[in-house]
Length: 220
Image (cartoon, rainbow, N blue to C red; front, side, top):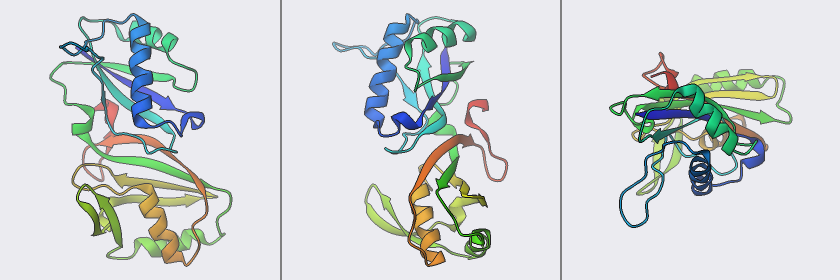
């Protein structure tokens, strides 16, 4: 049995790196008293799988980790016990019990929704976004495991909209095609002929399935 844990990483913890987040979760699970599964060997540790690491500086509203269990526990008890052990800025939003054969969250992940909140955007910025999306190709330089490589990010942009001073984005997030919000924003403001302003970027939701019929990852 495994439990999918949907949690929030609040803006106050946005500068905490992924390894520190993993340690915090491992310690919380140890304190919780839940029947969690440990690795074998001389230095047993809590077995955790995260859907996707968050970039340093980015909060996440509905992040997902998978927790293997040694024995069954009901969803209500699990949520209650882990919530007691987690700090206020790392709350558990929901849990879902799945079978051991259920695919790992990372294997089902295909995209993510983000928001970028700016202090101010030009009044006609929606027109700029529309013109940006009308391009057949959007060339960019993307960082990969083998170094910096040119790519076309247009197929990786599934949604881009502006409302007030907030940009909403749905971008590919998988091994074969990933467009990070920073890369998109750099390309967008370069297209607009503007210096890129500072923004708080938040990952709102992790998605699975194929475009345009994405589903929340925790529901797959």
